[in-house]
Image (cartoon, rainbow, N blue to C red; front, side):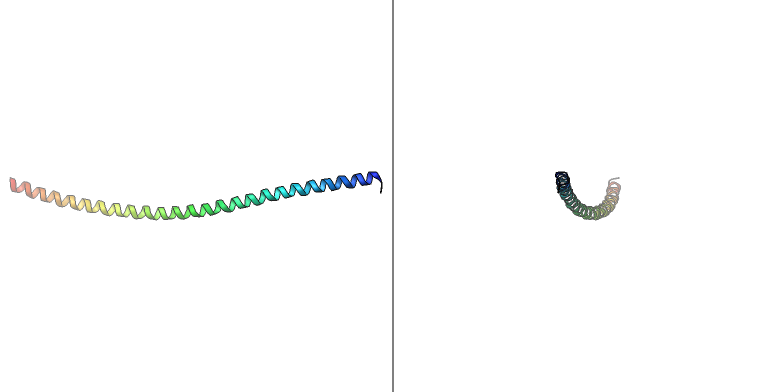
Length: 91
């Protein structure tokens, strides 16, 4: 084996080692990105569930508000009727 052949082989081995090291780093980066993505998906699902719960709660609150407004209107009408009767007694 000549010195040139040995030098070429050494150069190829060094390039291969560099390539393997680069690929390992890229793999680590990709795995970290996958892990981050999975965490974000999990957080997104939790937020979607929270939004659904809050949307339901909002609908229930609006329904209760509407019911209370109806009750308030009924009470107001009854009070107005009673005030008219009181005014009629004083007249």
